[in-house]
Length: 157
Image 1 (cartoon, one colour):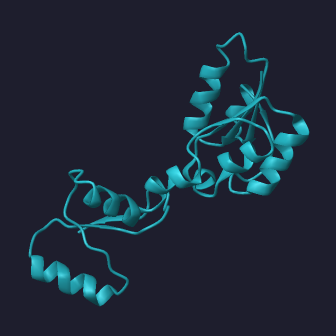
Image 2 (tube, rainbow, N blue to C red):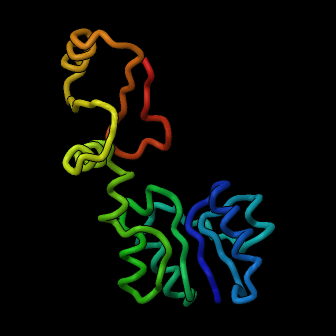
C-alpha cells in the first residue's frame, strides 16, 4: 500500500514508524513532514491545512490510504475531501472532528447528554467574563478559547 500521512510533528512521525512495520506498506509519504520524518518517509511541502492541494496531490499520486492526525486538517474536512475522490482515510470526518475543534460545541454536547464535565459558561465579552469570575469567587479558573489554538488557547487564572 502507498500511504500518505498528513502532518509534520512527532505524532505523525510515530505513526509513520508504526506503519513501516507492516509488510503491506510499500511506500510512505508525509505532507508537509519535517527533517526527522524525511529519514522514514518521502516528504512533500504542502501545508496540512491546504485541503485542496493535499487532495490534488493524493489523487495524482494514487495513494491507497491516508492518515490524517492533526486537528486543523480534520476540522477543515480533509477526510471528507479525500473520501470524495475515492481515497480512504483514517481520522474523523468534519462533523465528528467538531468535538475537538470547538470547546463550546463539546461542552454543550456533554451538558445536553449528561456527560460529567466541569461547570462552564460561554462569553464573547471580556468584561462579562471578569464579572462572572468575580461573582463565582472560586480560583483557579480555567479560560478556554473556542476553536483550535494548538494547545495555546487555555489560561489558568
